[in-house]
Length: 88
Image (cartoon, rainbow, N blue to C red):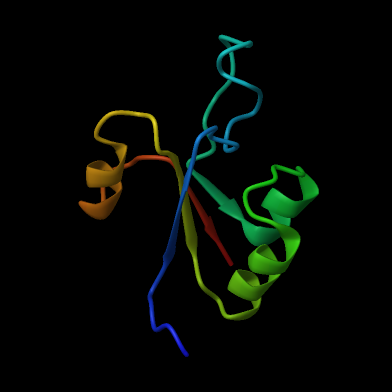
């Protein structure tokens, strides 16, 4: 089975796309965009290593956002500045 898609949306219970845990550090800031290499070097744990490598190799961008934030999924689908875009 093959899946044809233009991007992967990764809805996580905890959003790993901040400089620190925003619940513990009020100064934490969100990464709006990261390259695959930046995400790997910062060890953000966005996806498991195999899935992350497959997305990178297939040039499939990943949009990471929190599933618990009300309206986040709708915002992502509508193209709003929500979460973090991981790209080449």
